[in-house]
Image (cartoon, rainbow, N blue to C red; front, side, top):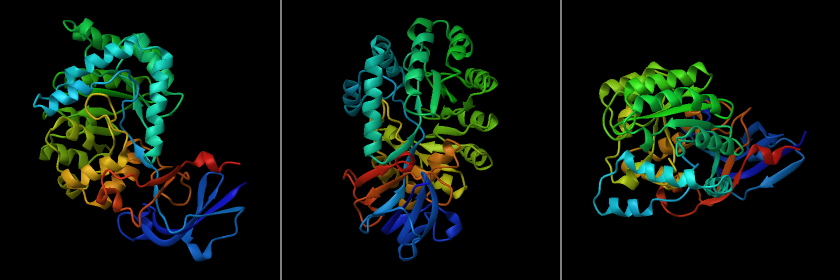
Length: 389
């Protein structure tokens, strides 16, 4: 069994609430030991157990690897002109997804995989060690199946989003498309998807359609999550709680009833700062969620239409500036919160028994992730696999 000590850490963010040193469990002059990819000891740098190897990080800050619990990486093409139009005053709508559907259907498997791996490399360079990605830009049986097959080669957190929008060929027969999503299409993806998702909002799917789709996935062993309340207030959040969805994502338009429902549930409210930033939409106020003790995550929502970013530090900075997170809350939401949104207990913290997924920062504290927006503070990104014999 190979053991590695990471020592001389100026500031270590553990996310270990048992330490009782604030929300982030921050330790100074710290160290931790990794045995075959798992954290086996955490403590003061002056009392490190004997190990096979030591890595001196020379006083750098270390944070748990970021967990990106909401991304759309399986696509072709881009929508830069659409972004420019929004910046000139046009409003965002879900309809723009259809242009990406056309490009994705026309792309080869090789082109889709190359674009996916390019984006994954960007995520890694931005400190993301675990990420989820969705299908949803194919919207045919064959295209959804190949999207998830390709995605499953790079992550175990794959989400079936056949219910992204109703494709053009079903425009006048949306119920027929729901039948396809819950029938033949679902049959073809159950072996490569872990999650099932629905865009439940204006211009996409109704609460009734979303309930039918999610229940069909649950019956086949997929775990539910949902796009809810992005474009307007609706019943998506209530449906998320009803079906015990792991997360309700976007949550831009919430009322007290929604917040109370989330607070009394296991469902994480995943906020997506890049979406509001890129669509010039109203930002949700995270203070209301935290005050109600709702579990909160933030994610990149990387997609070509409404949030074309792979930078979790950017999402942290926007969450602090425009969603009223504290810096500590934003860092927690990008790490431990993301883990909860994926219902993972092995990531999102640096404590005994966790995977050795962590990020070194070229900054004296993690506060600089929000304090220095747009500056690359990621020195290196590490995952547990590096430390296996």
